Length: 227
Image (tube, rainbow, N blue to C red; front, side, top):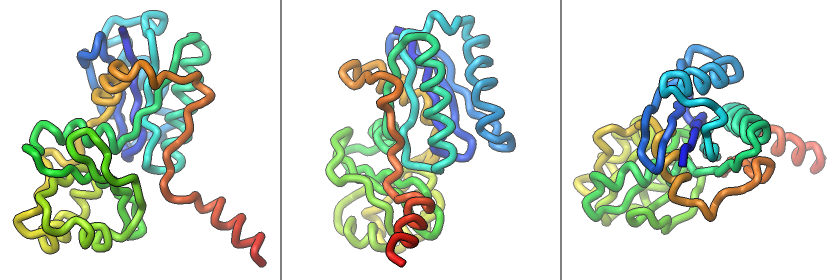
């Protein structure tokens, strides 16, 4: 099975092609270019570099979040368009699940805390025991999350772990550590997770972003309604 995957949860993002669960090529995007400009070109370049035609792709995969609202909307819309045009399924994969899968290599039995920088002094956070999510995603101040994690060895991964590394070590002591590569490319792992999760395939229009935090537009709408 050939899977074409895209991640737009980080400022740069990445795309990847996997065949039968093996990543053939994974490429980072150019963060200096706006997503709407670079994504179609990145995907077409990836197909060219792997000598793959769009018609050869059996399924598409996309990171559903959490991350930048704009990045998620553009990334999902891009892959929905390709899947619709090709008449192929699209599977959505949580970036937090992808981070947890990558961290398993070095977790050595520790819990895995996946942290994505949510800006505004907050992180999108979830907690895993190997690949099993044991705490659902939240958006919160890092110190609040760390207070709930103290006492048990935990491996932190994601750009939030990089941003708040000092806080992790200060509050967790020897019980906390960060991944060797705290901000890995995710598209390759998203492609392999999509290949394994055939039951998760959905029609393209069914894929929805995993925001965790409500959008500013929603908050403004509710504020106006309460006036």
